[in-house]
Every structure is written in C-alpha cells, then in structure tokens.
Image 1 (spheres, one colour):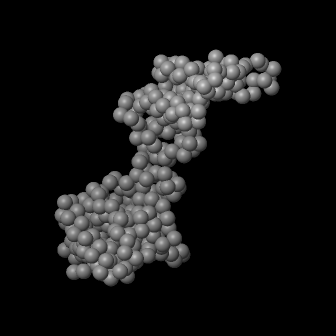
Image 2 (spheres, one colour):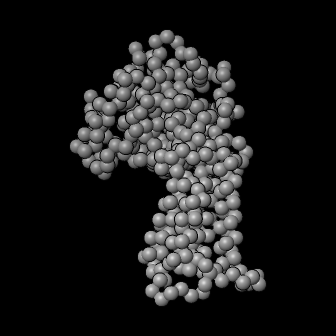
Image 3 (cartoon, one colour):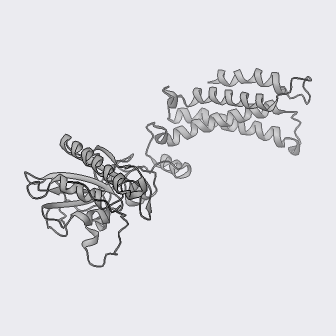
Length: 346
C-alpha cells in the first residue's frame, strides 16, 4: 500500500519539483498531457492497491481498512491545505505542483477505500447493515439496508384475500400453481388477475432486489433493485398459465424498459418470473410470438420487448394497504399501465 504511494514521489519530483523548490530545470516542467498520464497512472495504481476487490483482488472492508483510509484522507487533505493556503496561515511551505499531485492521490485513495468500506454493497462487496453503514449509505447513496424480519406493515400471517377470502400465505391447496409477474404498478397488475375465475389468491410484493424485506419507501428510492410484482395462485384446471401470459402481454407495454406510462423507475420494469421449466419455455415462446405481432402491426413504435424472463426470486410481501388495493372501498382509481394495442396470436 505505502509502496504504491512512495512510487509516485520520485516521478512527481522529477517532473514537477516535489521538493518544493519554486523553480525546476528548463524543459522538465510537466506538460498537460504528461500530467494527465501521471495522474491517471497513479490513480490506477492506487485504486488497485486500495479497492482491488473490484478488480478481482480480495480487499477487507472492516474497521481496520477504514483506519488507514482515514489516515490517508487526513494526510492528503492537510498536505493540500498546506500547499494551497499555507501562506495565509503564516507557514512557509514552498510546496509546488508535485505536492499537490501526491496530496490528490492520497485523498483519492483514501476516499475510495472509505467508500468501499461504507457502501461496498454497491460495488459487489458484502457490507455491514449496522447504524454506521446505514448512515453512510444515506450520505453516499447506496442501496437501502433491508431488514432481517418482515416489514411491520406486511399482512398478518392469518390474513385472507379481500375478494376470494382464501389465505394470503402458503401452504396452498394441492393442485394449485403459482405465477409471478412484474408489469408496472402492482395495484394495476393485481387488478387484472384477482377477480378472474380460477384465481385462488393473489398478493403484491417486491422481488429481484439487493436485500431482504424491503419497504415501499425502500423500493421507491430506486436503489434497492426490487420490482413491484404480483404473485398469483391459480387452479390450472380452470385457468392456464397461457391464459395468464396473454393478459400479461396484452395489458401492459413490455417494450418500455423501467417504465409504464407515467410510472418510471426500475421497480416498474417488465418481468416474468418462472417457477418451472415449462413456465420458462411458454414465456419465451409467447414473447417471440408477441414480438412478431408488434413488428407486423407496427405497434409500440417498432421497439423491442425488454421483458426479463428469469427464475422466480424471493417474494417479499408489500404493505397490507397495497394488497387488493383496487377492490377496496375508497381506493384511488388509478392505472398506469400502457398497453400497445397488439394481441397475442393463438
């Protein structure tokens, strides 16, 4: 670590006078392109030393890693302040460009390590979820921390469906199957399915994100990575998975990535989350059919389908007031879905 910093010193000294002399030999002053090269090379070297994890190198993110980072940031900041404003403090510094470059390198390296230790999750590194980490995420913009237990406002374990009166939690009766879709606002998507014959139960929630048990406010930050989804428990003898897919394709716009109408964000992305290989194959087959129909009819302005078709991730229940929202008295009449107008061929 320290060797990496030290290696910059002779380079800076040779080119821009690190020793602090106000003058350097004619011809040795660093030209702008060379200065950029020096800063770039130093940044790469320091980044590899301090945040190597993103380059495939294992690097710690605990308190022990943060302490040298704080030392680096402090030392670099003092050096910068001394070189820039030392005169106004009555201190004779004589520190030139070389000192500034090294100071900037110190600040940059320490800042990278600090950011990695506080918000490592955003860099693909496991980070803590304690108070310090939550504060750091709030400051640096990392993903919400999530929680170890269900959100307090989730439906109670004995909750029943507002329309069917059936349970909201498994186990489901023998013979029932499960489907999960993301197609914009989950109030709207659940409303398309929950009253259909053959639907045993439906729930809205969050899936496909970075952490467990997110709240609505977590998801609305756009940083948790979750999608608003509807999970459907259905009787395949009455309504088939193909019937559910027909509603999916025809009742929203699968070509507008991370958007349905005025609703924008990753939580409004189009997604089919399959539980079986048969569901995956039918989802892909109907996607291809619907894409051909969009091209033939010029619907959706010629855009390509952006729907993600992936294995069903863990489903986390949304707050109770979101469940079967459109069926409840006093609900706000709202639907942000924007169908293309094309139909799925048989």
